[in-house]
Image (cartoon, rainbow, N blue to C red; front, side, top):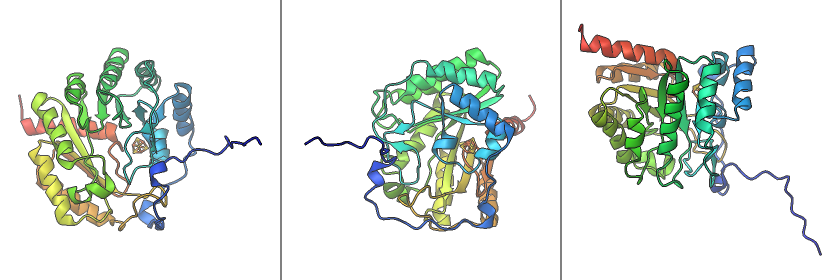
Length: 318
Ligand code: SF4
């Protein structure tokens, strides 16, 4: 008897989460609502992304800001495929064993930067624990390709943690991005449940190493709130980041992608974000962006201009 295999059934995006119990998805408060993306600018950005066969974290992470950002040609490119080797409880990116690297990808990203006339570009990636260097050389090649094609474009990278990949971070730092971003995502107590494949002090140390090796590079990190962290714990993370010399902090509301992801503990109201922003500024960050819809790449172009101005102001007249 022949066995029929149903090839039409799509593989689950998050196989490791399939056996988890469902958590009810909370109704979003009014301050989180966003409009459906319909503008011509959004369609133009989407066309370039499709034509160059690129991935974006905007789509893969189901980012609520996609309508606003893509309308302004601001997309965050996600390199090294659409499949991640980690299984973070907050993240909507597909999990599994990724395919080989696409050697043509750095050039395609650079072409998209030129076609979209980007003054500032944000490049992120999936985690590639399967590669000996964690994808560091591919990051460096992408930075070089953008520099060659569009020398005036400033480059911000949002990297994985390069855990147990000796020398990888240095390869990326030496490619000289303008901003090196690595998100701590949450407070250390929640790492085991929210970011189980990562280590808090490894992530912190990565940011510190960037500053030690090349202080010209701005460093940036982001936190999600609403996962069950306390205010005290958030303030401790701010202190840790300042001790590591981090320039720019972003804080945004965690949103649960599916019933299988970590549940939302609470929706943090806008005035609490304003208060966290004031505290972070008082702790000495050059820039802070905090709000329910803040994401590490949200308004990254305008924020980079402010960051540069803040550094100039802090260093005083020449
Ligand atoms: S905030 Fe970042 S990830 Fe979200 S749509 Fe904008 S650029 Fe993309």
